[in-house]
Length: 407
Ligand SMILES: C[S@@+](CC[C@H](N)C(=O)[O-])C[C@H]1O[C@@H](n2cnc3c(N)ncnc32)[C@H](O)[C@@H]1O
Image (cartoon, rainbow, N blue to C red; front, side, top):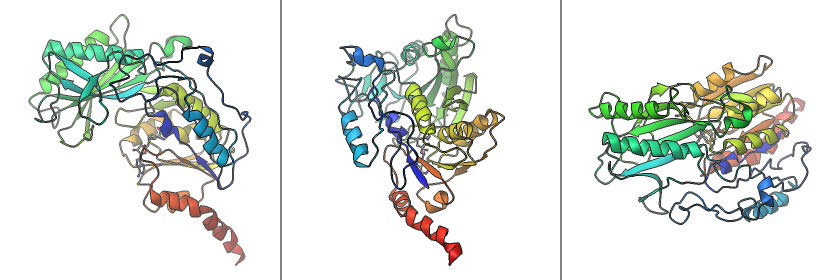
């Protein structure tokens, strides 16, 4: 069995240069890909000024690196770490240094006269307004500006955490860069934003729902498909009244624009509903998927743990002709996006493909059995101890099953 440890999670946080560890060694490394054992730097490294130059850097908790974005010092630490594990072909692609973030969850606070849209200041619940964020795709900033305008014109009250009042709590902005009606070279810059408004009510029949609909129509009229330069893809609502820190409630409603949101990643068309996890750095994730594919033998049985809507597993199914791909994910909302993506897989893909709603920390060994390759892409808190234990004991366990017929 080859174990493929993928830390695509490192794509999600906020520094502008991203690490893309290609694979880890134990227990038995897969055949090395053709990539050389070097740190590959983006063309930006030739520029003397790889500094973030963002006016929000000091106050916003988003970015951790301000200088040397083309090669932050943590790259050397990562290279040393992987070398110590026997992985000498660690590579690093920074991809885009600015405007790379295609997905953002932002708090909406302040007042209807002076709304603030941004991230919390480090260690506080004070929101820093970040209209000129350098990490955001430019159309996320344009959509934030339009949202502020709508809040002011329609008198929408942002959420007040202390009082539990106000209508609009958060907004999630996700950019699709997959518009095949324009040339490929222009698609990224013309990315369109799926806006999900997190509304402080139980459902769409609550007394403040008129304001929600008015705000959605404002966004659509001023940025939607009928505009000269459209940049709003669709508008969704999520309903949340909890006093906890959990951003989303369980109820989602599609309001305006296209219901389906597609991106092209790792060689396949991928559907991403706003309720499903999506990687923030679209370009870097695509590059990581392309690298990862080279580590997976043709015809392998793959288990994709922490799969979300199964982008990694399904991209492997299509490009490595996998015998089987099992995706394991705790969030049931991701299943619909998985199914839509499967429907669009090329006809030649004949892998046995399945998606399972399950907690990987419960009886993890049952998910490892029979797999040639295991992909793990956990949230920021990392792998659960039970899964780490199962992965560590796996070679022993595999040995037992292999030897059992001879007993
Ligand atoms: C970093 S995301 C990766 C998603 C997916 N691999 C992708 O690239 O789109 C982590 C995913 O793990 C899921 N998750 C968190 N805890 C889990 C658990 N205990 N068991 C299974 N999935 C879990 C989350 O819902 C989330 O979709």
